[in-house]
Image 1 (cartoon, rainbow, N blue to C red):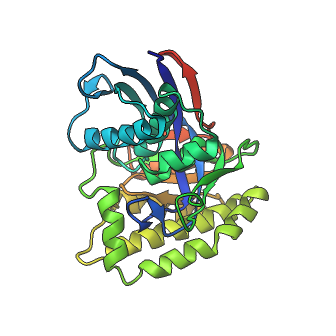
Image 2: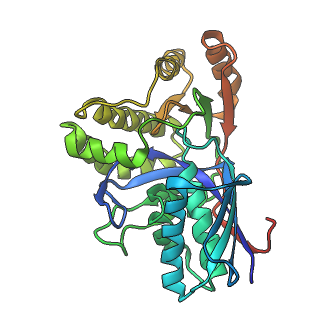
Length: 328
């Protein structure tokens, strides 16, 4: 029984994924561009065991049950089918990510699960194949196979809807300050929220077109190390994505008053010449795209208006790491 452990880091999309053209295959309506983050990751250990009569799953030392367990078992079934594996599995995951609060814990979780489960089942997958496999657990997990900046092509079928590295070694000053507004699970999960926006928001297609039409601009900005251009594109894309939720029928919203306060602080700082831009996912937390040399200025502005606010600094992170054994 070979034990395999994988570590995958979470990523933040600068051009977003929000909605599927094919729900069954988890194929997105947009091509997304992301940055993998060093500070937030999931470690998952998997081994198959012929003495088990069902999969045995734990998350942070507690048994995983309910919807979360169903998703993991469905994913393991896919791996078993690929590998011709009939045994049930032990899956032990430790999440170093605030779960379900707008930091994509599902991205690192399913990327790590794809890496550990496939190898434990005897498969040797390329990074592209791992990305395709991870995508079928959680769309954004396709990007967490890679370090630095990655691109998930929307594609036209399961083969072409795959992520790839764009700039793995980020050797220039860019960071994300995650301002934690809430670490509570959200009321509307991403999977439900995105499809509701897709089917009911009159603004949805406008956002899709904006995102797909600006992929080249974003990659050009990354190549040029142009933080201002990256930030402007990312903030507009995020605000447009959240506008699709606000204009859904019935409307829903992940952002809180505190989220908007942080977005406004970023805008005020820009007026003072500090390049800082907000991006938000399916949750109230705001991530501020900025340069490390401005950290103190940004922190001072945030704590002046939001005393006691929790802030985590995240820097560009590595791609997936897979090892034999229980430790990484």
